[in-house]
Amino acid sequence: MDFIAGAGATNIDLLYENMPKIPDVGEEIYTDSFSLQLGGGLPATLINLSRLGIKTKIATELSNDMFSEFAKKQFKSEGAEPFNLYKGSNIPLNITSAIILEHDRSFITYGKGSIEPDDEAKEEFYKIAHGAKICLMAPGGFIEVYKKLKAEGTILVLDTGWDEELSYKKYEELLITADYYTPNQKEAMQISGCSNPKDAALSLQKYFERVVVKLDRDGCLGIDGGEMFICPEVKEFKCKDSTGAGDAFLAGFCYGLFNNYRLKDCIEFGNITGGKAVTATGALSAFVTEEELLKYKEVIY
Image (cartoon, rainbow, N blue to C red):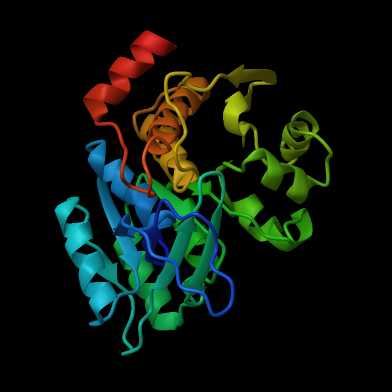
């Protein structure tokens, strides 16, 4: 069990920065700042884990289109070459055009959001993830694979992301199967029906012995062995773009789990990787190496 696995759609971001406003219908606005990057999501978490020196296996969907070819090169450059689950000829990625204003952002996205696996893709993912120490979970059609991995001793870490219909009823099968869940405070309150993060965290003890609720700029709340605590954010990291912050937090958190740290240490690692990620535009632009992560941990916490 020397690697971390996960299955998720690849996201590509076309970033238009320094935009004065969102163009109205019929308008065209120019900017001198543009970049094409891999976006956030489960593959981004696994790339960040690869940067921290952990072997990863990324199951995703890629084809032969120009965006898939770009993604393949980016994965390879990060030492995280993906395993392809896609057999069709269409563009299977999510492609987002992001208009970045001074204090806000606007998006338009092509794609279906997540992988919709058939039986062949499920079996292929199981072969890829079999033997993993940790498997990242996401909503979708892989629940039976997650259950098989859990029975084999793999640690399962769930990130649902935001959903207007987040609820215990809708996500109960995933919650029961997962070992850890890492919602932000908005997601935790929505899924639990609670009006504040503390009550949401207490409610999540229904499913988890160890609870994690990200508090954005207020750090992260944890419950371990009945003890509730808050790990503060890293003050020196100044936010430029919050894209990918949750994915990066999850990478630091899983780094701690992989190396058998206690929950509080795992959260502190997550605060460092998540905090660093927001200091540059794009989901994967800013990151820490393993050496930097351990040094920040020693100095800050």
